[in-house]
Each structure stands twice: as C-alpha cells, then as structure tokens.
Image (cartoon, rainbow, N blue to C red):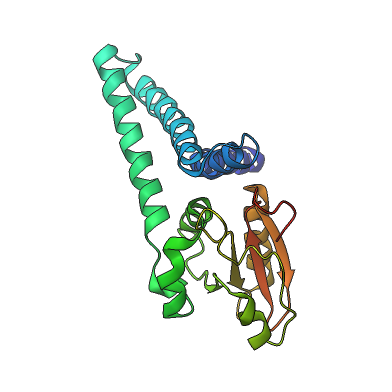
Length: 216
C-alpha cells in the first residue's frame, strides 16, 4: 500500500513537472543540437510543450466525459494550450523579481542575457524562490578588479549576437542539497554547470555558445 501511494505521488510530480522540463530542454536542444536560432528554438519548445499540454487536457476531458470531444472542441483545447504555454514562456523570459537579483546593475543587464538561459531561470525560480543571480555580464577589466586573471573567451562577455551566455548563482546561505538540486536541474536542461570559488563560492551556469565552442 505504501509503495502504491509513493508511486502515485512520484507519477503525479513527474506529470506536473514534465511540461516545464520539455519547454526548457526542448528549446535548448533545438538551439544547441539542431543549431536553430534563438527564437525558432524557443518556438520549437513552445510547440512541443503545447501539444503535450493538449494531450493532458484531452486525457482529463476523456476521463470525465468518456469522449475526446468534436473537432471544434479539440481546436479550442489546442489554442488554449498554446495560449497558456506562450504566456508562461513570455513571462519567464521577460520578468525577473528584484528579490532574485543581487544588484540593480544586473537587473539592467538581464535583457541582454540569452533568452533560453532566462527561460530556464524563470522556470526554476517558481520552485526555488530564494535563487539569486550574483553576476551576469562582465568586461575583461572586471576580472582584474576582482583580482582574477582576465579571460580571452568568457561567456560572461557579450557575444556576437548581443547576448551574454553565462550567469553566477549564489550558493552561500543555502543548504547544500538545494545547491546540488539547482546544479542537477541546469545540467539536465543542457547547460554547463561549474562550482566556482573565485572571489566567492557560486554556481556558474552557461549555455554552449557556437561563437566560442568549449568556452565557459
């Protein structure tokens, strides 16, 4: 009986989180593995997720009514699924709370962070509301100011497409299991994840960049 309850809980959690996983991982896959542009990649993630949500809605409708509905009903359901996913994705990409940003200057640069990285942050922050971005865009001289060796190719630099491909996340004042869970999430979504100590302990998250393969 206990195993059945546990299985039900795990299955429910999986079904709830799957659309979010598909949205982020799908968009990153289209961008990094299929070499699609940023917005076509995001659109691809939205399309796949909307169809998944459509399947969910159709299954639930069928369980309650015993039928899947007529053509118009299916069409409305599909449109509704797209509206939900597009709205959620747009909010995740555009909005970030001041509570999740260490300094005002980082908030000002947030729009120049790669949209797929913003999407990933926007999704996980719904669960990890204490997540804090401690660093985003940098220039070469910033490394010198921090007493670090300047890097030739850093994904903290603005790249040829005008976006920054890396952020740093706070690890201090957080339990280690939460830091590990955050690292697992970003790694599973297709991002590079490193634990840096540098000037302070933090998680360095970056999206593979075609302009500088292998750079972090």
